[in-house]
Structures are given as C-alpha cells and as structure tokens.
Image (cartoon, rainbow, N blue to C red; front, side, top):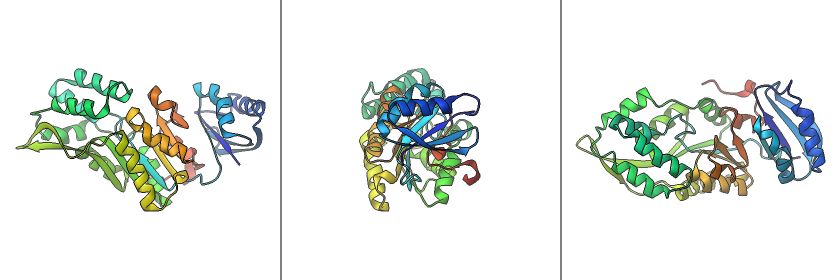
Length: 297
C-alpha cells in the first residue's frame, strides 16, 4: 500500500492530519491506515490510489511539513549515496578555503551559481580551484578542525542505516582531503571526490585526474547498486544542488528515494522528497524508522 509520511515539529495540534486525509480523499487516494512513527513528530498515512496524485494533493502542506509519498514496499533502503558539502556537512569546503585566502566572496558567488545550475560544474570548479593556487596545504587541516561540522542528523542517519546493513557512499564535487575525514567520522564505507594537486606543500591551483561532476555522481550511484546487487528501488540518494540532479533523478525513476536537502529550485523539481523543515533524520522517518531504532552518534 502507498504511504504518505508527514514530518514536522508537532503534528498533534495543527489539524494537519485531518486536512491531509481530506486532501488525499479528494484526489481519489482514500486514506486507509494512520500510524505514528514518533508521536507528535512523524506520521504515516496509508492510502489506496496513485502516488503522483497523492503528492500533488499534499503539496500545499509542504509550506510547513516535510512530506514524502511512496510505495510501502522496500521502504528501508540498502544503499545510501550522499553529497557532502551543504548536505552531510554544514559548509562548502571550497568557500571556506577561499576565506583563508581572502577571496571567499568571489568564490562563494561562483559556487552558488554552479549549485543553482547556472554554470557548468566542471568549468566552475576548475576556475575556483585555480584561484587557490599558492595556498598552504596546512590550511586544509585547519579548516577541517575549525569549520567543518556534520549537518544535524547526518551521523545518526548514516550509522542507523549501517546497523541494518546498508551500503553507504559519500560522493562529492569537493575534495578528498575533506571527504575522507568526513566519511570516516560519519561512517561511510566508500568515498569519491576530487583530488587537489599539492606541490612543495602548496596548492597548485589544479586537480589530479577526472573531475567528480554530476554525471560521475549518477555513475557512482548506479555502479554501487550494481556491485551490491541492489535494485534502484532500494536506493536513497540525497543532495542539495544542481550537480546532484542526475543521481537524484536516477533514484526517483528507479523507484527509490531521491531527496533534496534544503534543495535549490532546480533540484527540488527532480526530487521526490524535499527536506526543508527538519534535519537529516527526516530520511529515517521516510523509511519508517522512529527514534527508538536510531543509532547513537
């Protein structure tokens, strides 16, 4: 049976439950079962009918609630593929490196345009990295210590999925010097990111090897699913920007979850779950997992 999951700070006093049921019924999606995942926080409404129709019917409620409509089958995902910057961590690492170099405003403006889909990602990344030429590599460790923090809920999400045997992949258009550390701390099993060229202790302004871009992210998702023997309906992909769009779309098309975390508009249109009001533990609620089954982090 299809399920609509509503997630908010407090569902008990808002009247949203009856409104959601009314909206579903008016769309021909008859509510059948109502069950709390966590009382007052996350609620499942089972219904009969078309998932796309249910999603459209409930979309007005997304101004206040995070909502996902999906099949009740294969709900717990066995593959997590996630972006890093502004998804698993709170910052864009290249912007923070630029701040140490005194050029954050210039580079951050390019980053935002690239994430919005206004610039070719690979070209924009190459241009930004070139501006970092001469930066002492010790700044990377300093940046990791002073500024790189996990996004709320990130560790709980990754470690909880690890507990039921899900494969976890971090794929980033950022840099291995950050991604390796973040992956280790959060509990990812596999990492893909760009390699900064460093000579005599300084960034050269170049990258080594192929760029991890939007196409690479989708390829990583599909390859991981194939290696693990997981159908796409068993996959969860999450990101925030335009370079995450192909992997998000692949997860959605295959019947899995393609989630936009505080998504830019271009990504929001491709995702089947937009997280705007909650932290990353919303992805556990989307899988029907309440707090009592979350891993400690």
